[in-house]
Length: 280
Image (cartoon, helix red, strand yellow):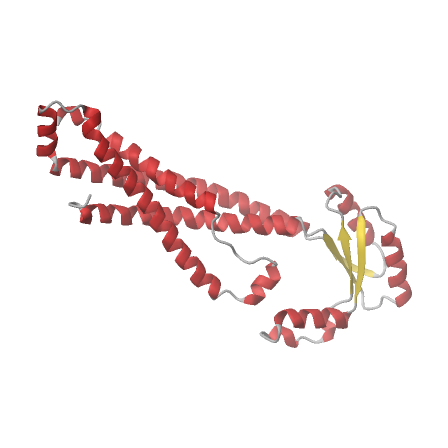
């Protein structure tokens, strides 16, 4: 590999480009799944009140909600308190912080037990929407369902990209090994004349293919990590506040799995390209 470093470097670069595509898809899926779990475990619901709701209506609603099984906490949030809370989160970094108080409806924030079945929560929401003082109820279930669909779509896309990466690794490493084998034809012939077995001759090529695949995957992870931290540094804080979750990089098990997968695919491609070694 030291003698043919230019050829191997080009091969590693090509593999890194292929693994970047796969890694990017996995990165998107990882963050979408984290957001889905975050919203599914929110354990809360927001009951938005009409402007015409009186103090008596609000107290009656709070009392009724306190009797509902599965509701562990009730917090009333007036329009002014909602406006102040929103302004503190943005800290004056956006035009949104200048919105008037009227833009923020009063609400009752409910803490819901995690073990409450979705069907029961849906039934409670349907009943609350019929109350005259209630304008709308948000349980964040719709967001969870949408994120779930995105995660499933991302997993499918990642699987398709994985097939493309597999084909690219096999093609690039296989072509590189065949080219290297042609350049070392004389060495291989001498080794076989002095009694070297096929396995003995193939072993260095297989190791080279494995190293190429692993280095390609490792280079892809390094490049993807650089791009990730550059993008995260420019990410709008308002978007993070809205989602309630900061983006995260690929977990270490996924990174190690990508590197191991690259090494195994490289070794397999090298073996496949050397199947006619006996005739060399």
